Length: 229
Image (tube, rainbow, N blue to C red; front, side):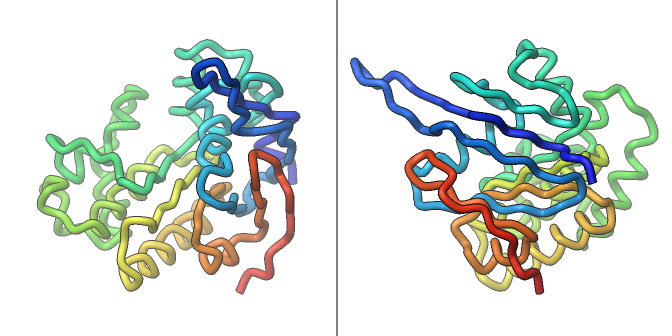
């Protein structure tokens, strides 16, 4: 399998007053297409920063990120946004649904941005697959946290992304709901052959991916294959 994501000597620093803070320090790894991986580490270790750089949401201070053969650091902001819309799906801890749009409208947004047609049927199908076929006209405020995350998962998969980035996807959910959302995420990911890269504090969740990358103090300190159940 070819690598869909290549990270090479990635460093990210921020100015804090007169000090320079290094959040990521010379991180390198590759992710194979169709594989699943988790980035773990203590709070403040640089996990979410790393995920954002891999997804082209931010630009590294030095080093390179190549996604599907495209060097993200060589692109301007508009081209990075275009690349994200073409190849990437996102699932966030806080759902990030648009409050004034229904579940169905939230799911169709990425395809509307692409200018595609016939997306309504696809969105209804995905919402049905995540168990919300009867909630398509509900607004986020009318949905539970677990239901909102299901909408977010449907939205992430509607573009048939090559890679899905998930940042603490079950972090705001109770244990039972989290287990349901986990199963849904992995099932859809497997059905669609998507590459999954996830950030989580939950080591039990991390163990369900094929590979675990551990970040500590901004450095990659461990990279191991997981025994997926």
